[in-house]
Image 1 (spheres, rainbow, N blue to C red):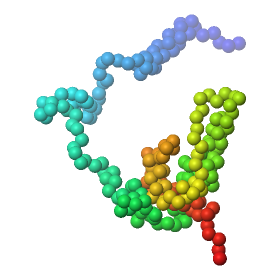
Image 2: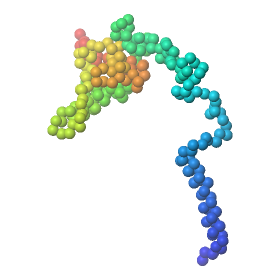
Image 3: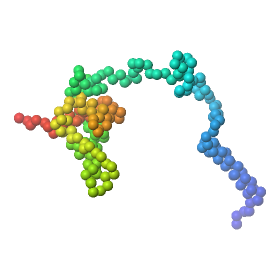
Amino acid sequence: MLPKFPKILVYGLLVGGSLALIPPVAFARMRATPSPNRPIHIFYDMDFQPKFKAQAPNPLFADGRAMRPIADGAVARGEAYADAHMDEGVVEGQWAVTLPAQMEMSTATLERGQQRFNIYCSACHGYAGFGDGAVNKRAMELVANAAGPVNGTQWVAAKSLHDETTRNQPMGQLFNTITHGIRNMAGYGAQIPTQDRWAIAAYVKALQLSQDAPSAK
């Protein structure tokens, strides 16, 4: 038989266990409940430094504003966009037909372009560039399904990159389209780094050449 503990010991353990739960419960409540009081700062660091908050008045300046407008002509580091060839695909007012001087037309560049193309472009244009990507196919099926629920689907068919109008576009024009978009296609300038967009444009030209190469004589 199990030994019988004194009642006072049992009561003591119950009371002690209950009291031991108070600190973690209090801490949990303090973390979950917003307080109007300032937090306790053991190390002040820079929390209470003199400063002007956004939209606050500042008598130091003639316009009385703490927030200063951007100086005319200011350019963020690395965002001068002074190289028209690299940044816009233009050379002396014409679409560039080559990669920028900072890049080399190499197997590595084309492989990088293929990888990025497969990630960003193939969903609509297809892996071979014929406009038969999975997203385009599904959208066209929904639009063509007049008897079923279309759910307001509207879609402009993805363009084949082997159409004559696109096939004859210089590399710089393809780069510009990837960057800024065209018609219903959104631009990818914010998602794809500049050199990767050039690599995609170079790969597209390689794709086009693969389907329109002159026959050997």
